[in-house]
Length: 401
Image (cartoon, rainbow, N blue to C red; front, side, top):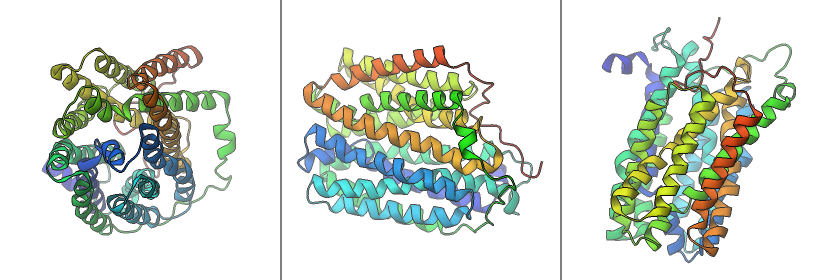
């Protein structure tokens, strides 16, 4: 493991440190954010709207960032992402009521531009970081990136839930701020790489992405994101209000979800892209069903662990989209995944709040139905291409080949 850490190269190591520190800070409040917005006076539908601003920002800004990433140095786009995240958390932590929290979540969501650009930066490190082992596959860097973030959020949700019980939910956000500061410091330690060379024939995004099978694939992925977010968004509020779990317990469940993400990433990692995506949706659907059946603690433990598969849908979706994209369109490809996830968040989170207002169990039912419909349509309308392993979202060609 020590040798692998050395082989990754200086710049990649700083990005991994930054992601882990970010995960620690975000993990403190990730699974109690609906409770915090509720404590600011929001109804369930208003809570869905406020948290949905996060997804709206992703929807609006990630794709343009990906387009710029194909033409500008990646680091120049990464650094503003970290600064926006820090500013967003500060606004949320100081919000006097839920209306002020909404722009905070919007600004925080804008930091998501850093996700596809980070992936792009690590892929460029193959050529430009002299401290990196030249023959180390890109998938190693990308999977280590995901593992670093997941390592940060395995423990901190439990701590955040306990702090929420002892000190109040606002204090949790305030305590998370130093971790975002450290994460930002780490990312500023990276070095800049040259902008990617533009092909003579142009990027031809329109011709690439307006093919019928590509459009259908994007639609299925988006439906999957919507379905899981309808059920997942207010799950912590459901556990508190319907099954009367404490915030400390909800924090522990959040840690189990993070652990589930790590394990499902490894266990499902050898599946093809589409099969892995469907498997993640299926596990999320089982989680929703278990939460509907009973509030027994052992069952909720299993349900929240399985819910971690939701976060594994994104790298599988990236793998799907990457199959349709040439090397010089990599920034666009990585950005498309998060754009679709942002669209799914806007629709799913707002729909979750509206349904929860009517009946707390309805979002879980809607999630199950949406997952079933999405998988069925995918099987009927698509013949999965030879999707590569998730082991870095895609077997990326070596630079210079």
